[in-house]
Length: 258
Image (spheres, one colour):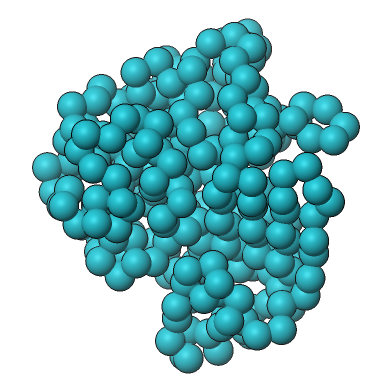
């Protein structure tokens, strides 16, 4: 059902730098650091394909990035090929609709597709706190749900909430993907979003503003001048036609998930 047998593990490991002997934590970090989070296909008027062959071609062969469904469907297929037991789930981002894809693997929250969010898996345990690249994240139980929170200067900020027992089918992600890519109220349908995360450094391009956030320091926010150079600094190379199309959209600000 999830097409895990179609994954080219050798190509994936060449892309991420991980290997079949890497631990779950090492696999998670390698994926996040190698493959950008981005919604460029949506900005080009496309609904991203969730067929695993297409995802693999885009994220691995063409060295592009994607958003949560693409990241998670690829990563969980890799994990299944390596023998992990994977439960694919969906969560509600803050107070929005239940559209974010994450997974539960060996008693851990696995989430390689939440933008500049999680670098490592988190144990599914009440009050568990894990440093995520310099920003502490916490899991807590809220009735039947797990809530992921990020520590900010003021307090713990809610990221997303999910129920670990609610199973998902491929069609659930197909429907959510169409909403996220096309609905006028989706944070990804009307502005460019690119995010990168590594230890101590979070970089977020939202619309025409680039935010560089270093752990323990005040964020640096700047207006993008050279779009091509900015995208290349975030490990994304586009054709001139694609760049031209995206430049024409940058004047329409809509809030985006971080």
